[in-house]
Amino acid sequence: MTKRGKLKIYFGYSSGVGKTYTMLKDAHQELRRGVDVVVGYIDPHSSAETMELIEGLEVIPFKLIASSNGMLTEFNLESALFRRPQVILVDEMAHANAAGAKHEKRYQDIEELLAAGIDVYTTVNAQQIESLNQTVTETLKIPYGERIPDFIFDCAERVELIDLEPEELLRRYREGKIVSREKAGCKAKGILKKKNLDMLRELSIKRTTERLNQVCNWN
Image 1 (cartoon, rainbow, N blue to C red):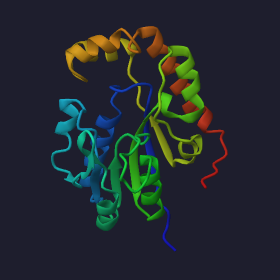
Image 2: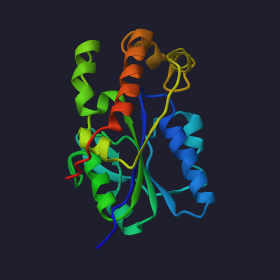
Image 3: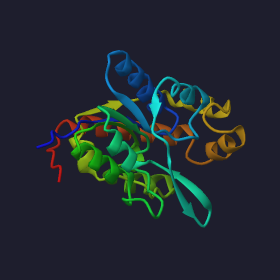
Image 4: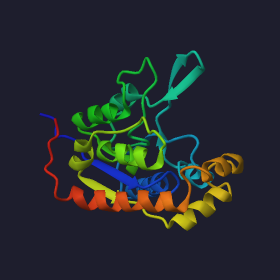
């Protein structure tokens, strides 16, 4: 019987706090230790300094799926299972896959990797956890459609909270280090307000602590 893989989640209160960056740094450390680690999917819109960290790591090519909006890039689950590394990086666990992918949600792809005995590193934001989604939506008046069930978060072997002062995050957005300056200006008028980020940060810290007392029920 195949031993189940281990799941590590890089958890944060917002995009831009450094989840993917830290995940890639850890991948390089594992590679230096002789671990067979590959990149399955990294958001191509990540910051330039994050994308630079992909260099030197083996990358599984994206899967191209035709849609009414053209060709979409998705994580290639089939290639990952064929390659069968010790550790694979799969960014944005809550992502909804394009029509035509094997699974509807990326967390379902990750579940299949774990069942095959492959360790997975992934990233999640606070508002993407099912139990926090409604609270964030009602408080910020901004709907979030992509989310993961709580049991996946609670059953992960490790959750690493990636924290950043809200003032620093806002500065990085203003300087265009995370997205373009134009997009940053629009977002700063919505969710990217300090009071909103403070609330999300508090939720992420509280949920990370609560997880320690949760009963894991991986089904």
